[in-house]
View: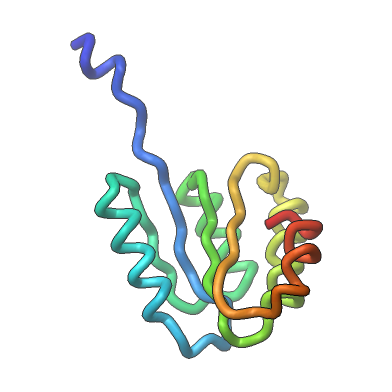
Length: 114
């Protein structure tokens, strides 16, 4: 019984690509790597920011991981974080974004909250 009390719950992660994405292999690879490390992973495939936030709330996740190659990282990324703020979860979950985007966009992504 003591062992059960000392066990922490698994980290829960959503991995998704922003809508309009056609590149999904990286997200699937990362999802598999996280699962292999013992995390509980929900893979949404392509999703709109509203769908991502709804799934994050329903799944009570710790991390929202976004993969993007389509150039929508600033527009849809900012929408995602604004919806997270409106639902009072922005500071309760870790929001990560990765993919292919200009290095000059990194400070803006950090400013947005990624």
